[in-house]
Amino acid sequence: MDPWLLRRTAEIAAQYLASLPERPVGPAVSLEELRSTLRVGLEERPKPAPQVIEELVAAADPGLVGTQSPRYFGFVIGGALDAAIAADWLTSVWDQNAAGYPGGPAAAVAEEVACEWLVDILGLPDDAGVGLTTGCQMAHFTCLAAARHRALADAGWDVEADGLLGAPSIRVLVGARAHTTVFGALRMLGMGSRRVELVAADDQGRMRASELERLLASGDGPAIVIAQVGEVNTGAIDAVPEIARLAREHNAWCHVDGAFGLWAAASPTLRGLVEGVADADSWATDAHKWLNVPYDCGVAIVRDRSAHAAAMNSFAGAEYIPQPQHDERYESEWVPEFSRRARGFTVYAALRELGRSGVAALVERCCSCARLMAEELARDSRATVLNDVVLNQVLVRFGSGGTNVTDEVIDNAQREGTCWMSGTGWDGEPAMRISVCNWRTTEDDIRRSARAILAQVDIAAQALA
Ligand SMILES: Cc1ncc(COP(=O)(O)O)c(C=O)c1O
Image (cartoon, rainbow, N blue to C red; front, top):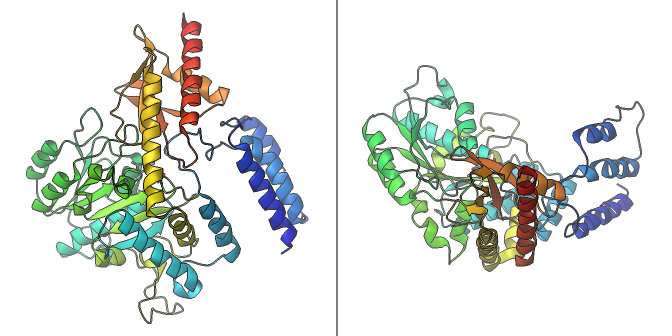
């Protein structure tokens, strides 16, 4: 490969990153414009690679959302650390097949080490099975497949061999404010999203443990309980120790959705919020959120290694795949995919760049920035902060005299471009979600963004007057 193109790509990437502090955070073009510039027709003849890249950059750049911007607060989207970006580039250049050790020995060992560090920093059992998935949804899929395996194996049913038709039924109990991806995973596993038993939640979105207790006692048979650490709107944390205890008492598996909230365990000052979370049976989280690894990287962690491996294990029985000779890692033993990207390199690099103290500082800074945002907005009587800001999420509504202008504020703020955040529904009314998840975000960014948001409240209120 012509090294010139790699150098040119590095230049383009560096210019993009340098532009983030002042670049409008939202995209600058419409869907139609993007389609007209990117849909060029598949040509018959090849094109020189440098030209392909220059044309791609010119067409795509105006349609990028500044998710790496220090003032991007949409969904729950992490930034990307320098070492993680660089390791991600090398992952592409090295192009290892991370199905197993033979396809990339260094990739397998880097992932093995990264997984050890992950369970260590998250305070989870050091002998748990760990897999790096595309994201939290597939981490749920992986963990719940292990849960399904254990529940049915204990009932004398081999679900991997015999499937679900005719299998004993598994109860699934889920908090009423569970993330949509939990239901996606259940659907794909044949456990259905409609047949779950929803456990009532409180005003912050936390599962009511007393309600779980009542429901668990009202039935029997194999069961899976799904708790949450970090509700997507409020950041609220379920009482996992109690939920895990109830699950244990009823012989049920306790899975935790900790997509971002689990990272509180990495901070000595926030760790108390997730005390006892390690009592569960499986945990799904993301490295592409709070660890600030570039997309994509989720993490599935399962206490019962044999259930985990039995539910995945896609290379068993393939004669052309050399079987492990020693205890070398076959990444596909722990995730749904077979061939896949060597995600371990980026997690390894991110954890080395930050170290323990750096991860703690990143998580704590995001939380203090979220608290500052809530304070700055709450100075205005037209803003109502709806959540207890326990982590990095702020849920806020704008309006006065019974008029809710939140949707208008979100639309206008997105267009204005100082910052970007999205909306949600809370108690049947529109609300704005602000998620602080990026190592680049400073208190100045928060103050500047709060001013920009409040300026839109003025405009929206005037328009409606
Ligand atoms: C609580 C929770 N669970 C799961 C997810 C899904 O994560 P992913 O997009 O990585 O699948 C999210 C995403 O924001 C989340 O907040």
